[in-house]
Image 1: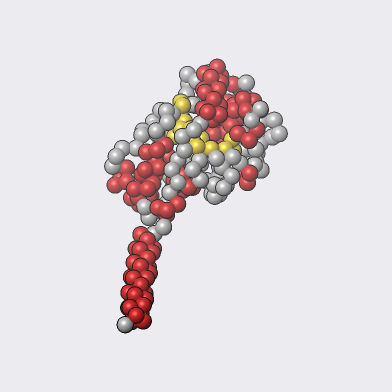
Image 2: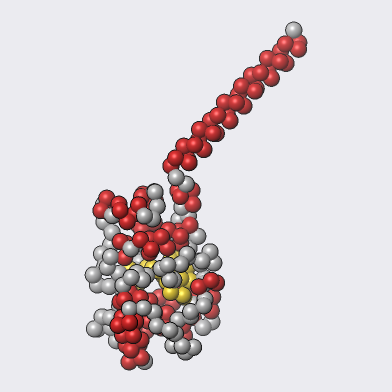
Amino acid sequence: SMKHLGKYLLAVTSAGHRPTPSASTGPPSDGAAVAETAILADGSAKESSACALVLTHMLRPLLVKTPTKMPVFHPADKELPATVTLVLILCSAGIFHNVKFLKALMAAAKLNAKYVPIVTDDAFRFPLPNFVDEHRDAIAKVTQHENALADVIQQTFQAIAVVFQPALYSSTEGVLLTKAHEVAERMLEATVQLSSLSWMETPAASQEQALEQANSTLAATNVSEVNLNETMLSAFV
């Protein structure tokens, strides 16, 4: 019921951490290692964490026939499991300032994970083109390739976002259930993937070294061919 969800939400926001789930109410606590669907959210924000838990709770009965799609709220201090094929990206105010979230987003891109963006906060604003310039310090803690991260963030909004805001006063149980159904449908129909950026994660210095090594190898091969030709010509003289 909405009363139960309200208590659940209050428990998270007031305690400041994820509550211990019961067998019938909370999200799974031991499924992260085999998760195929992960919820990426700002774990440092109580409201965002609460929203992730409420969404997980409401999606459970909608995904009974596809248990592998059951989402797991990804802990910010853990690496994203290699088994993840789909991520629900909860967009809240300041989410793209969060280093741990950005690292998880980059990890999802390396896995070519499919995704569904979900706006959970009225105060959320889409990143502007000057995002990299304004957040260089945070980006530097995530990757050496600023443009790669900026590209991943832009990819996030190539799909239309679903609005899911349990904390909003006008969000009745019916409204939230309708939105949860929309999220579930989008999860099952998701086709758009984040781009793999594994090649971009190689430091520029290493790329230059690899290029120099390739050129040296090519030059050595050319010299060998010249020497071979000279040897063959001398054999006929």
